[in-house]
Amino acid sequence: MFLLLRTILLWSVVVFCVSCKQKNNKDSSVSSETTKVEFIENPSEENSALPRLFGSENGLFFSWVETKDTTDFLKYSVLKDASWESVETVTSGTDWFTNWADFPVIAENNGSILTNILQRSANGTYTYDIKLNLFSSETQRWNKNFILHKDGTKSEHGFVSMQPYGEESFFITWLDGRNTTGGHEGHDQHSSAGAMTLRSAVVHTDGSIANETELDSKVCDCCNTAAAITSKGPIVAYRDRSDEEIRDVSILRWENNKWTAPQTLGNDAWKIAGCPVNGPAISAIDASVAVAWFTGANELPKVYAAFSEDNGATFKNPIRMDSSEAVGRVDIALITATEAVVCWLETDGAQTYIMASKISDDGEKGEAIEIANIESGRSSGFPQMELYNDKLYFAWTEFSKEKQPFIKMSYLAIEQL
Image 1 (cartoon, helix red, strand yellow):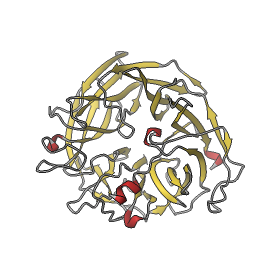
Image 2 (cartoon, rainbow, N blue to C red):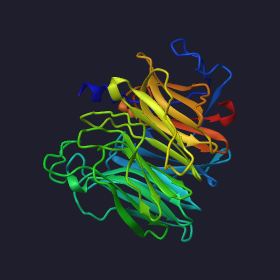
Image 3 (cartoon, rainbow, N blue to C red):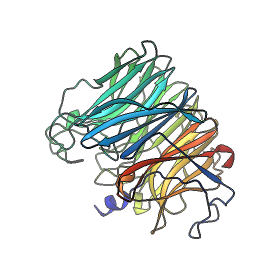
C-alpha cells in the first residue's frame, strides 16, 4: 500500500493573474517572467467545485456542482468571446454521489448539450448510477435524469467521458461495475465477483441510446476514462488491469465497424495492488492523436505523452513531460496536427504545482510553465484545461479562509507557449 499512498498525491487546478516565474528548485526549462497567465472571472459562486470545461465553435462550456445545505446543484454557463452567458441550473438532488475523482462532465454538439450526474442507487459506498441530462437544439427542451445503462444492478457506474459524434449524437464511455455485484465492498475487493468493466454507447439528441458495448472486461476501478473522435471514429484511453495487477494505460479504437483489441501505451509495467486514481487524457484532430498519462512504475512517478499520426493505430515513443516528482492528474489538448499542450501536477517535496508545456510529435518540448501553486488535498479536484479561441483555459478549486470551496479560472494564450 506504500506505493498506492505515494502515488495518490492530490492535485487540483489553480491559477492567479500572475507572471509565471522560474522556481529555483526547477530546471532551466521552466518558463521565464515573460509568460503571463491571466486570471478571469467566472460565474460560479461559493460552495462550488468539480469544474469541467468543453470548448467548441459555440463557446467554452463550463459546468460545476454547487452545494447548499444537503442539496447539490449541477450548473453551467457558456463563455462566448469574452462574456459569460447567464447561469443555468440543469438539475439538483440530495442523493448524489459527489466525489473529488468521479464527477459530472459536459459536451456540446450543434447546440445540443449533454451532461450527467451520479445518483445513489442503494446504501453502499459505491452504488450509484449515471443519469444523463440532454438539451435538444431542435426542441429547445431538456430531457432530464434518464439512466445511461440498463443493467439494473446496485453497483458502481461512473468516470464518464463524452464527445460530440456525428451531427446529432454523442459518444460516451464509462466504468461499469455490474459484474462486481456481491463482492465490491471496496475498490479492488472483488472476492468471487467479477471485475470493473469499460463500456460505451451512443446517445442521440432525441434521448435514445444505441450500441451499448462492453469494451474491456477487466479494468482499473477508479481511474478516469478519456475519449476523442478521430477521422475513423471514437478512440478511448483508460487504465487497464491485468490478472497480474499490471495497470498500464491502454487504448481501444473503432475501426472497420468494430472495436480493436486493447493496445498498451508505454509498456510501463506498473504493478500496483490498488487503484491510483490517476487516469489518462486524450485529444484528436482528424488522424492525429495525442495521449498523456501518469505512471508510478518502479516507484518513480512520471508523466508521459505520445503521438499517433494514423488514428491511434501506432504511436511514437513516449516523451517524459515532468521535471520533478510527478503527481499526475493529466490533461492534454492538440493545438495542431503535430503539437499538443500537456497539463500535469508535480511536487518538489514542499509545494505542488500545476504545470503546462507544449510538446511536438518529434519530441521537441517548450518551456515548462508554472500555472499555479496549489493545495495538495483531494478536495482541490482534478486540473481542467481546454482550448478555445486560441487560448488554453484552466479551472480549479480553491478554498476560502472558512474552508469553503470556490472555483477560479485563468487562460494562457497559445502564442505564449
